Amino acid sequence: MLMRSGLAAVIVTSMALGGAGCKSKSIAECDTYLAHAEKIASCAKIPEGTRGTLKTVVKEMRDKLGQADLDNAPDEMIEMLRKTCASTDKTLVDQYNKLLPECLK
Image (cartoon, one colour):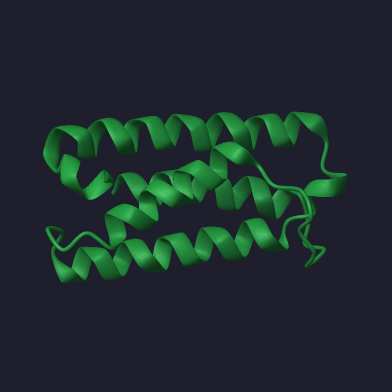
């Protein structure tokens, strides 16, 4: 599933950043990706089982990003997260714009 592969990349990267438990820095591309994923997860046109899975994926990603020490992370790691989230978001949005565009409104 597309959401899982994007999540896996973000989780691996955020685990490498270590967990400080405090997140004051945010990555806009990841926030955008999560916002789109949440819209899709709440779309009534998506089967309930899939919506539940998507909600779990979004929660896991938010938790991992919240545990990552983004304030002290090397710039290369932040850039990798930015690129991963932006790429995954683009794929997700493109896919749902074709399949169920109403889920992104």
